[in-house]
Length: 129
View 1 (cartoon, rainbow, N blue to C red):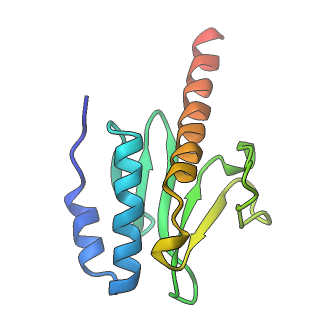
View 2: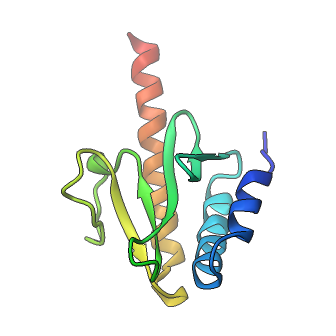
């Protein structure tokens, strides 16, 4: 079942500085294109995306010169392109974007699909027990 986009996230984006807003809108569109039934909400003051558990979230970089997508189970992901940051964190891994050309649509879709697969695998393992 296809979910609708969150009004709370729409409001969040309207209140976000222009550069960050455009980057977030672009990444948000890729998330929705890749996972049409994703659940979108605001948690911990930023947009979060869930499907059978937390998948990812969008957040401004500390210097506000770009954004990142944080993957909830990033530590389990393959990171075949070697672009993850946040490796000092226990579970989450990030991909940073400072300009639109940093967003590689095909690669981001592959990372989102892997995150979704990890959540499905977790669900399947739970059902087996």
